[in-house]
Image 1 (cartoon, rainbow, N blue to C red):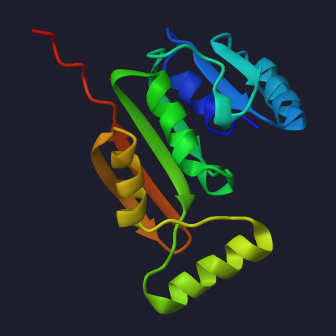
Image 2 (cartoon, helix red, strand yellow):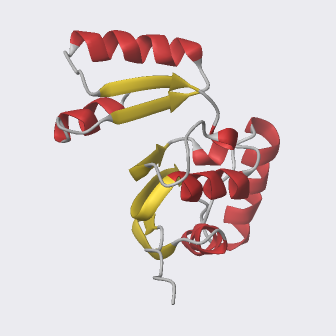
Length: 160
């Protein structure tokens, strides 16, 4: 719906902000809101996070809020995000948090089986981010239902 795209576009009026969604109704709604708010730096694209339709090293920032826990192949999506980020680029993510302990694991398994929604603990998401090449992983919030984290794509090392 552009709930994050539109405020980010207001913060970077000289930049271009791309909103990507698999849902055409969400994109139509976002388009109406972008037009109503007079935002001229937003591009909305129909696509899937499983195959981001962008060249490598394209974006300074990728934000994924409220969706990572819905994707069927999280490692692949994280790899796609890493691919399209410029070296030194930042990835921010808000996802459903898995509570600790056996009850947390049981609740997460139930949520996954019934609703198809995954959940992550901060150490688990950090491990997944590092495994696809991110560094500087930080947990900004891990309470109740939500987990907010960030990471950076390493800056390319000069060849010798």
